[in-house]
Every structure is written in C-alpha cells, then in structure tokens.
Image (cartoon, rainbow, N blue to C red; front, side):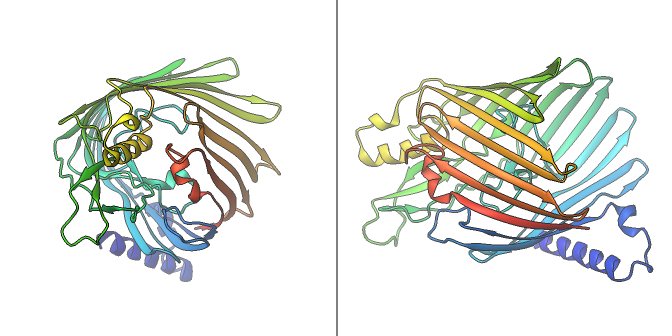
Length: 418
C-alpha cells in the first residue's frame, strides 16, 4: 500500500507539472522527476496458465533529489494487465549521506554484481520478477531493504552490506500441476544477511571480489505433506523453499585492442539439511568477449557450471520424489554434473541511431534447450519509443527453458517518457 501511495503522489506531481508548468517552473528538474507511461500487448503473459493475448498498461516514475551531502532516490511502478489485474511495487527507495570517501546508503536498493553479459553468477543481492510484462529486462529488477557502507580509496572501493529484508526471484509457476497441490511459499525472515565487496575500476583491467552470506533468492521445489482439505486425487504437496547460502564471487574485465573481454565466477555453498530436493554446492563460470564487426556489435560467451556431490534425480526409485526432485534440478540447472552453455548477441543501430535491432540467445548444450529473443526498438521522437520483440523458448520438457516453452510470445510496447 505504501508503494501505491508513493506512486500516486508521483503521478499527481507529474500531472500538475504538465498542466500548469508556469506555476512551478523547473520543479521536475530540481527533484529529478522522470515519468514514463507504457501500453502494450503480449500474445501470452509470463505465467503458466491458459491465457493468450494480454493487454498491458502502466506508469513508472522516479525521483532523485539532492541537498548538499544528502541525496535520495525512489522508483516504482503501477501496472495492470488483462489477465492478472493491477500490481504495484516500490522498486527502490533510499537515502544516502556522503562525506569525502565515505558514503552510507539505507533503504530499498538494487545492487548488481558482475561484469558478464546477462548471465551473472555473482548477481545474488537483488532479485527479479520474471513474470512482469516489460520490454526491458532491467525493469524486472527488484530492490531489497539494506544498509550499505562504501569507502572509496582511489581506484578501489570497499562496500559492506546488511540486508534485513528477503525478496525472492519470481518465476513462472504452474499452480495446478496434475496430482499435486502447490502450497504457499516458505516464509523467510532472514535478518542476518551480510555481504562484502572489493572493487577496482578505472585501470587497464577492472576486477572485484565479493562474499555473500544469506538466503538464496532462487527457489527449490520440495515435496511436502498434502494440506488438509485438499481435493481428492492429490497425492503430494509441493512448496517453493529457499536455502541458506554462502557465495564467493569474482569478476574481471578489460580490453585487447578492439575486443572487450570479461570473466565472472561464483562458488555457492548451501547450508542446512542436505535433501534430494535442495540444490547442491556448485561452481559457475562465464567468460566471453564483444567486438564490432562491419557495423554490428557481436557478443559471445561460454558458461560452465560444475555441481559437486551430484546425483541424478531421474534415478530416484520413488516416482513422486523423482518427479519433484527432477523439476527442482531443472529450474536450478543441476540436472547434469557439468553443464555447458553458450550465449550470443548481435546488435546494430540504424537511421541516425534511432533504430536498434538485436538478436540474443542462450543455449544449454547438455539438455538442448534455448531462449531466443529478436528485438527491435524505434525512437519515434525524443519521448516516444516503440519496442517489438519475441521470446522463444525451446527444448525438452525437463529442462530450464523447455519447461516454459508455452510462454513463447511476441509483444510490442509503446513507451512515452516525461
């Protein structure tokens, strides 16, 4: 409710500034106000249901005021679609105090770790809503309440974080699987989440080292008892649970002539009871490069994940355990002891940089599943932008992208910014 009230106030402020600009000249610039309205249509929403064409409309607004050593930032949205109705969120809302090399920032924040392109093993502090119908993947990000302390030491920056709020990644979920009851997600109240990061930027090679101690924002599927009062024919309950984890992360990036290169790795160690449903400790590495070729920007990366103490859930004797554990392994990319993958992206600008065209893909080689996105964005003028794209998922049913292949969809979105 606070997020709705906050956004309503922003929309009212924006409307007032547009209707009577002479009454408060320069107000939007002084407080860093920016608003965008969007309308669009998807051939399928981003949840596992029987819906098809989905209409979407919404507003996204931000404030960025500053006063001396203090500055603040707030961003949120209200969005409605023809399938799920209205939703709202305060994505970020923080206050920062800066004194020389020291800065302290408190509030809901989006913190992005990692230098790889789209696949970021070390990006573990903030979460995403993968069901949100938006044209830009960055707008799926969700901040978490945290306190950050930063000390700048020339090219080096040391960050410390305390996170008293847990916000999970939201994924498409089949709420009515055959023979099973999906119970409410595990409630997490982990106020002992901490992180540290040392970053070096500005030299010929940039790098960082990070550590996170907290709760994994990506769920496991766990078999639980059938809740009382469940319909006849339900033989198991399934719950999304979130294990405790320690993550050690590192990344490095640089240039070699006209080629930009990068590498990123994360080692994740899970704490608590080791069950057949919980993901296993693993090491995940992504490395790649980008360059310009004949006017096109080309980006290629290789991904490899090594799962420790791996046992194939497809070999379990109990058919119910086998089904639930296999789905849990699929959504966590842990069906195989070693998983290989490739990402590719080509992009180019035309018409005095008003037309952006891009084709991006992620392919996991072991399971043969893939996600492909062709996308075109055209800037009609300084305020109006049209995006036309598609998300195409292929692969076997028991795989990361194959399990959501029904969500393959085309979409268009018109965005108007003020």
